[in-house]
Length: 351
Image 1 (tube, rainbow, N blue to C red):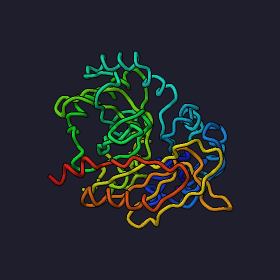
Image 2: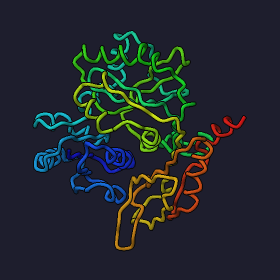
Image 3: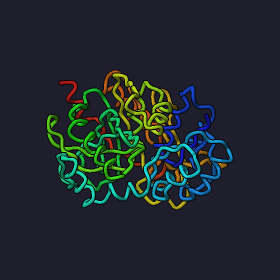
């Protein structure tokens, strides 16, 4: 099967690396991709905004499955356009996303579903990545995401600057989340003719026994996705195909018992031209590119978010050391990263 992934960041890079392990996958294309993705997939120079050109490419190349979690093609309604041409795609429709990100509409849906909710953005919130197929929602392993720019959870929100996925992180029992929140919510969405399929996050707070729904998070962070996929034992492409066919209820997904840590490397200043990028040898870590280009002078950082460095190990402290040891050998002008990812969790595990 030929697979097309639409996007150009670290999420897409991590997904493609996972898709390559599948026996179902013959070729992978990425539009538009980046320098790192070009080493594992065929990059296609089509803008994610141009869903008509993407559709024409998929028809011409005989693409069997298309996936995106990038907001740009989703906002440009890649789901409806591909489905109208009979192409298999997994992504929410633009109208569904607009509805789910509208506070008043989401509040009304939550009230109808009878689920506990609080759509404010205050206090501690856990983001849980999910797959949805229009009828069911599959919860992926819970992560701790470090969403502020500076150490000690200070500074402005900056997306995920790093993440941890480990067995000890599963704060909320899956059966409680499903019975109290996701099952009634998906049922209500279906009842109201709001098809929800694709990959997205749900925001949760409250106690483990009484979780509270805090809304949807349609952004899929590369730092978060990378640590989840490091633990995935099942065939990701098969799982995605089950979601696109509405068969998640019968899908079985396995994850290992490792602890995974990721750190996002960014540029602390505005990049007016590509900056020379030195990456570590990849022993013990995976490097997922976000904004990189290959030039005559070698690999370059080309945007604010540059790469995600990720590792897993039996012990959380080992995974963390692998990541920061690798980062210590990296360099480019303006390089910045948080130094405290997983530090508190590692210290707690030693007590």
